[in-house]
Length: 332
Image (cartoon, rainbow, N blue to C red):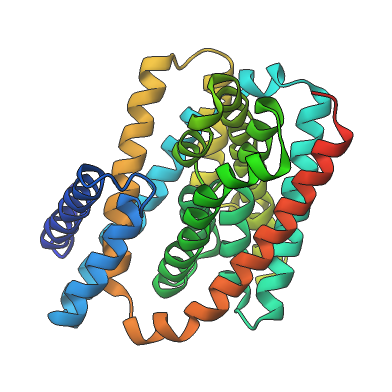
């Protein structure tokens, strides 16, 4: 099926912004800045800057919007193939139960914190999902379910990423100050850090055991994304109007995500195929974030930034406190 005519030039714009973001990220890495903003955040910032310098026409904006939305939805589906349920089983019931409890508490309190500082419901939910589950991917996936505005998505990703980077930088100092052994430090990192690559960065100095446990715990948090998306979809649509059949309440990409996650768990998708799907999902998400950056209003972003940082910080404090409590009661 051919793309609508408006989407073809828009896709080129998204590609250019995405390439610039990847180049900027490579430049940061070359300069030794490994824990800086990732390509998705850079794509948002570059897109927003380009749009501010050269405003788009209404027709061009419509093309960008009609291109970014399906890319993001397809990325959510493909992301399901990267969810390894076997890792969840290997973690053991006590640790898994503790991780689920921490995520549930972080989601609830994170949402409440966002509403308390004055964020609209969708933005508060995005910030809570980003902090509690898996950063950019969770925000992007939840945004598709919530039908969040471009401004809300980019604000959530940009400012929660700032808190995430601060956590990565601070954690190694916390390990030495608190006297945590590698196993407990790895679990703490997996419970609190924003994204899987950042878990690796935060635990690298603590050794391979810390890194392995950190990644395992983080991936278990990531596996919460599917159930959370389903709950958001059903709850959100039921609040929006009269009762409808389940297939009308849940967007098509949520069961698609769960189906691919199940296929991976039952071995129908091997490691190589899962990795390929994950790469495509990241590329599509990057293109979608470039589009969202092109659509945002920088003045509106600046107005809401302080409240988002406050909400993300409060959510992190709760996440860290819950994680510390889990470490105190679980046997590692």
